[in-house]
Length: 158
Image: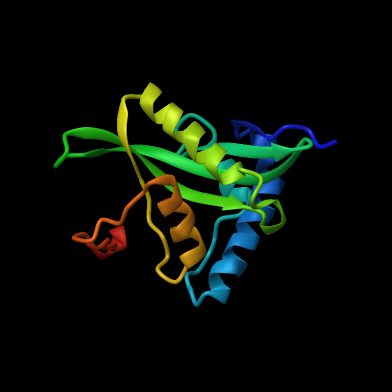
C-alpha cells in the first residue's frame, strides 16, 4: 500500500532530484515550443536556494519517500493592491504522479505559507501553449490577468 503524499520544505539534499525534475520540465516546455535557454539545475538550486541570501524557497512533494514534484516561490509586493504577494516561480509534478493530488497539495501549502507571511495573493506566469497547466490552475480557481503583459530586460542593458 502506498504511503500518503507528503509536502515538506526543500532541503539542499534535494538538489539532484530537483535538478532532474527541472530538466524534465524544460523538455516538456520545449515540446510545447518554448525555446527559453533553461539553465536551472541542481547547481543553481544549491547556489540560489540556500545560504545567507536565498533567491527563492521551495517545497517538495513526496510519495513513498520519493520526490515527485516541487514548487519554488519568493515574495514581492503589489503596489496597486497594496498587498504582499507570493510569486510561484516554478511548479512541476512528474507525469506518472499526476492525479495523486501533489500539484494541489503543493499549491495549498504555498498558500498556507503565504498567509503566514501576510501575502494576500499568489501570482505566477503560465506559458501560453501549456494548456494542461492552465486548466489545472483554473480548476484551483485561478484566473488570468487579461490586462497585463509581463516584460523583461537584462539589467546590463540599462
